[in-house]
Length: 145
Image 1: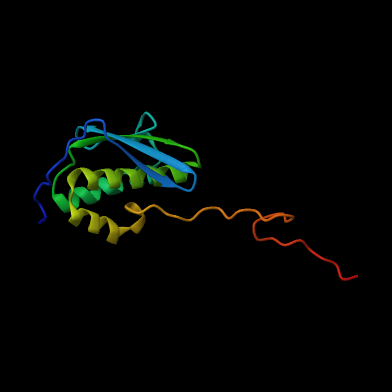
Image 2: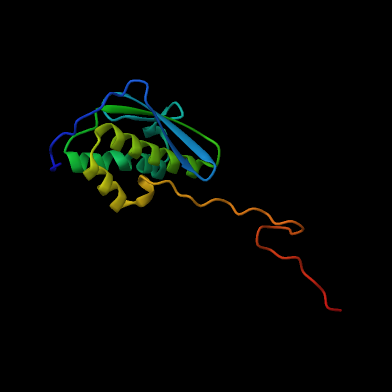
């Protein structure tokens, strides 16, 4: 698909997309609209600057690649984990929703080249604690005297 041409948009009725980061889960409900983002019932404009920019990244890349605003509004509901993980999970879910709804492989490739974790979840998890130790990697001290 060439730059500037609008993508074929699939139906958005009753579609929910999810993103995960650590223990945070973000679910995005998509409706027809003008590209607005709502995060846990708040407009994205009311979030902190870096959080607002992180949520706007997938949309700005879409605008640059396709030459127009997406025809969707994104309603993000995040839970679990911390605030940063929730924002990253929401960013992943928004990008995946755009790629799925437009069906554009070019857009998928652009997202992947920009940041892999915009379309592929980060698989790293917390390491489990070992038996008879204090932490995951810390070893019990021993005395020779």
